[in-house]
Length: 423
Image 1 (spheres, rainbow, N blue to C red):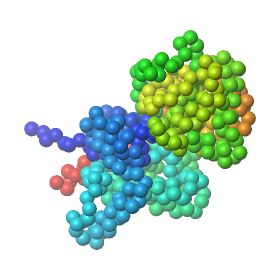
Image 2 (image 1 turned 90 degrees about the vertical axis):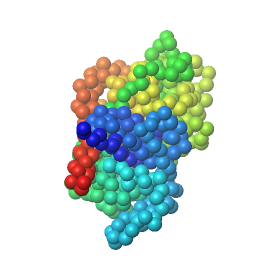
Image 3 (image 1 turned 180 degrees about the horizontal axis):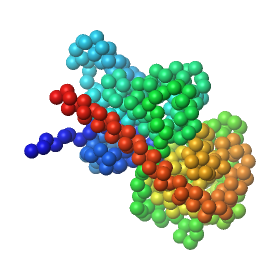
């Protein structure tokens, strides 16, 4: 009788279901797709929002959620992991060191998968750079094989970024470079463990239906455009002297006048009842909608929707205007004409693959809302051409998205061979 192997232990860091639905899209993709490639898995989600994620995963018996918020990471888990690492190097017993739930999850993992959307990038501030190092380095300290699934990395022009990247990235089993610009950034570090891939979220299954709470709000007698503002871009725009909420509202007014489309305003990152921050677009969406109050052609969806439902909403639309990266991914995955007002190379390197780089704008363009509307109108006018470009490119991109899962499979296969040798 053949002995049945236990499910693969997969620890996931850098993403949560709560708040940022881009991170949720990557997390959902791994949990949904990976078993079709490697067989049964047992997941440990090391979350920055453990209470919210535990509730969302309550019905999934293959997923355990653990607290890895920044304070817990820096003050408890990293010192503990460093102590365990040092003790093992010195061949000292480690039984006397505390065995937290995070330590147990990582030591039991066959692979650690880092799902950060962007990391080791100039200009994001020292605290985020340090967080990138600690989060990715935690599994390494426990000696667990760690990979970075598809994400944007760099630029690495600053000495601090290069130093941090060189301390961590060469120690990873594999790095998925999400696009040519990221690959060029990593080539500067002369890394041998990099493959250019497509984003995990291109593999995310779309929800079959919208919930009634959303369906009841949508226009029934006309096409509509989805607009997804961003708290991150708001902060950047206002730092450049642009009144972001006013600019987005004016863009929507002009878009309505120019196209006659109804407009659905929806957050792609959402934390119910919380103030605005980089993980919560709810407040900025409400502010934009308030300025447009009185126009029956404008709908606000002020709800916490999961990534697959948001993708379905975008698929139902005729046009997407967004500042959120994974909303853009959903636009491309559903062959929806998409205009992006972004802030990083990560947007343009993906659009470039589809021959649509001209539809990616820097956030500074919001100083002239008409420029956004002109590009949106061009996307609508050329919608057939845009859909054909996406349709021609999408299969190859989805195949390269699957390369992330094949990389995990290679690591797991290697660990399984090592396990057989040791026994």
